[in-house]
Amino acid sequence: MQQILGLVIALSAASALAHGCPGEMKAIDAKMPATKLSDAQMAKVKELRAKGEQLHKDGKHAESMAALAEAKKLLGL
Image 1 (cartoon, rainbow, N blue to C red):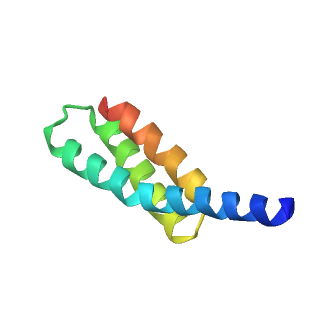
Image 2 (image 1 turned 45 degrees about the horizontal axis):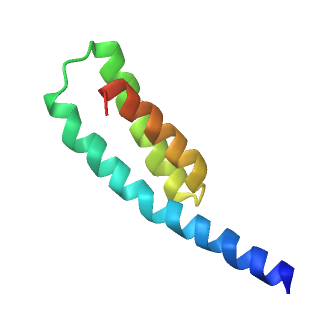
Image 3 (image 1 turned 60 degrees about the horizontal axis):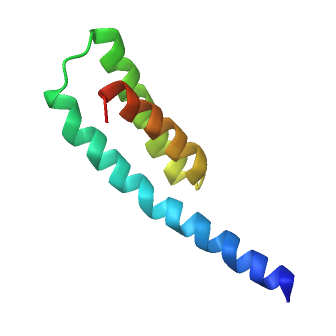
């Protein structure tokens, strides 16, 4: 019974992260045009945003959220 409960909790957490990734990407996309960064910094934001999207598509939601969080940090979000 404990194993089943643990599995349900783990799947719920993964599902929550999966739904969080698109929202994070939208926030990044909305902030990029209004943010003044150096070319190198903006390139890094775009790289992290693309990496986050690919990781999301690959089902690696925790890793996706980490990349997207780093991009948000550079944008001051």
